[in-house]
Length: 449
Ligand SMILES: NC(=O)C1=CN([C@@H]2O[C@H](COP(=O)(O)OP(=O)(O)OC[C@H]3O[C@@H](n4cnc5c(N)ncnc54)[C@H](OP(=O)(O)O)[C@@H]3O)[C@@H](O)[C@H]2O)[C@@H](O)CC1
Ligand SMILES: Nc1ncnc2c1ncn2[C@@H]1O[C@H](COP(=O)(O)OP(=O)(O)O)[C@@H](O)[C@H]1O
Ligand SMILES: [K+]
Image 1: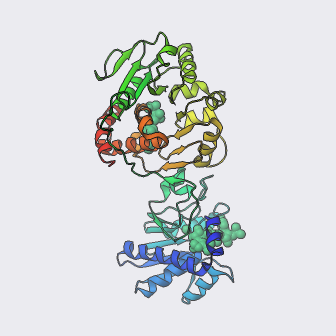
Image 2: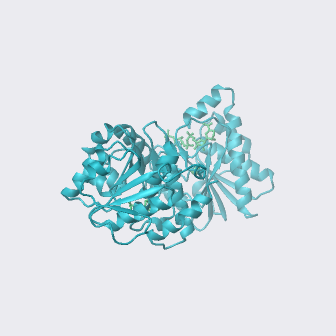
Image 3: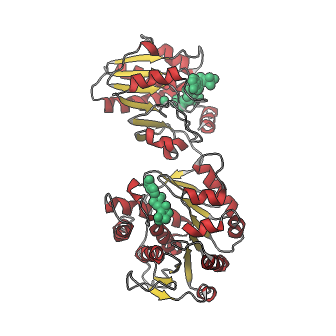
């Protein structure tokens, strides 16, 4: 964001003009959300405070009852000019009284340390039982989502300026922001990371047949129900032909699934028509599992590695995956990710992007803030999954959808799969069972026109 702002300034946009855009964008939302209630604007000493003074000035101009409480500020620069342009009463934070709507313009991306306890106390006093609108970020939150600080503010609505920052979409503080709105400041941004969007999925070609649509083989292990769930999801998400291979794979599941024994995995996986192989759901962690993983890594088809297979491969697996000739996709939850890539520093976006480069694989790092990173540097974040997804088996369904999308989705397969999975969860409503997700995939796909 700072680099993008500097580039905007270098191209001739004045800092005051940019701050005016920011403050005006916030003021418009405050006017809309305040519904005639009186407003208290809190302004910090930096540019976040500058935005706050601009916001207060517009609100006053529009006839809204607005008061300002501020921290001491710089004596020069754009923020100081905005403070001067306010030209009205400013109270000290300690003397301010709460109002029904509070605009938090104390700190944004310039926060460099946790809030001091007395400041955090004042903020808590002024924002308790009020409707809080945060400028860029609730004050006290680390924009890079690298760490969580005590005493940070919360908001009912947060207006992200120019771009979403990592903390808006990932990490524990995303839950403190309320509804996040993005204000376009007209700044050109680098193509760093994107949030997920509804994909476009075309129907099969006129001359499609089951193999052209994709033959998917799912390897079953100790808990065959999980593999069956994944295979059923693959079948429903658009694969032409799904083989469920396992010694105990014959019971249950749709009749359209083709069952095969797993006595010779190498020859099973040598089929040139394979669009994808999936290993991991319910695999178990014994010797048999290790042999299946070896066979899967050795095959020349695109490979999805999930669950137990990721845990079994662990750190030593990274190099083995990186040297595969065909594309590899990993779908770890947080624990599995750490087992393979370590519990390093940095936010989830950076860690996942780094892991994708290391393993030369596309990583779908799951959770409430699923991050998809590809070895070509592309990063997509899915920040709004339904928390009802936190139930056993939903990951197996995702792995199956991904395996199905590889043939037609190519580079976009992982984002397609995550979107369809998330959408199916919404369609399934609250408190669903993982199996039910599969029933809603058809509707989710129908929406992708
Ligand atoms: N560039 C632009 O023109 C535009 C920028 N925009 C806006 O600017 C925001 C970023 O502004 P910013 O960089 O000035 O930082 P900001 O968040 O106001 O805070 C920094 C001040 O707080 C201080 N400080 C830090 N931590 C502290 C703590 N715990 N407790 C106490 N003090 C602490 C720190 O001083 P320090 O002590 O660290 O030297 C510094 O004085 C951004 O989020 C967006 O709203 C938009 O208007 C578009 C135009
Ligand atoms: N709190 C949550 N909010 C949104 N999505 C979640 C949450 N917890 C888990 N999920 C999603 O549910 C799925 C769970 O996968 P996983 O942990 O592998 O479970 P399992 O192995 O039992 O299938 C993932 O797609 C994950 O992103
Ligand atoms: K703020």
